[in-house]
Image (cartoon, rainbow, N blue to C red; front, side, top):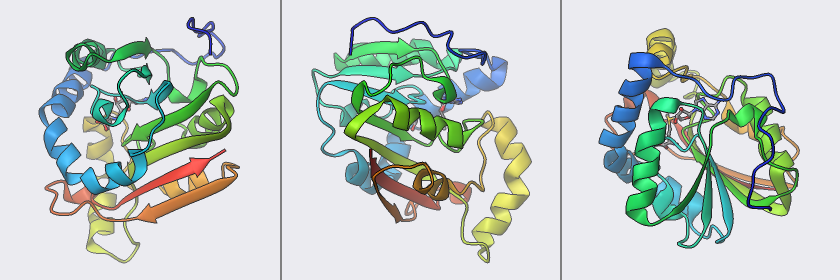
Amino acid sequence: MSSSLPDPTRSARPATFDGGAVGRFNAWFFEAFDRYINFVAREHKRAAFDGVRAGDVVEIGAGVGANFDYIPQGSRILAVEPNEAMFERLRRRAEARGAKLELVPAPAEALPLPDASVDEVLCSLVLCTVSDPHQAVREVLRILRPGGRFRFVEHVAAHPASPRRWLQQALVRPWAWLYEGCQLCRHTADVIEAAGFRQVSIERRRFRRSLFFPVNSAIWGIATK
Ligand SMILES: C[S@@+](CC[C@H](N)C(=O)[O-])C[C@H]1O[C@@H](n2cnc3c(N)ncnc32)[C@H](O)[C@@H]1O
């Protein structure tokens, strides 16, 4: 892929948003709880992200850089992040890690990246929050080269008859307000399975011993174009 990115105006969607105080809270929260979340999700992240090939690596919804340690040194990280409150922390994290960061201020639903241009796309805890997960995954598929991989760790809807699902349903509105649109009851595995990847491997596994009970139903996986 060329080092300059194409014009990000390929969509009418706004490229970035400023979530005000809630946006700043989220930037603070994901930096403050970064180690804890990475600890709780370590098995999922290792399974999904180990083996990322060095090169141009796209991370959608990069937040404040929680996954940078999983991206091989020397890679160029194309961090897709529309939330302006995350930018400063994201840059600082990249600088501290000596990572080559290219901030892509855009939503996952309209990636300003060429077709078939990268081999690795990853995300964690993002398809719960994007406004259109089907469109976001279509975009991932579009920018991947044949054989390229989409690696993901996501929290999802709990089993319908479980107490966790009851709690998720009760918390849907306040949770979405506090975490900028995050949906507790998404069926993200279905979205990825329906997207048209050549091969999809998904495992459902709880985040163990996590304090964040409503989001402990999780999946990790790798989808290959
Ligand atoms: C729950 S946070 C997770 C951040 C990071 N991936 C992590 O694991 O710590 C969700 C992230 O998705 C970003 N986000 C929200 N809407 C998005 C969209 N439409 N496209 C891409 N990222 C989005 C948020 O700004 C935030 O950084």
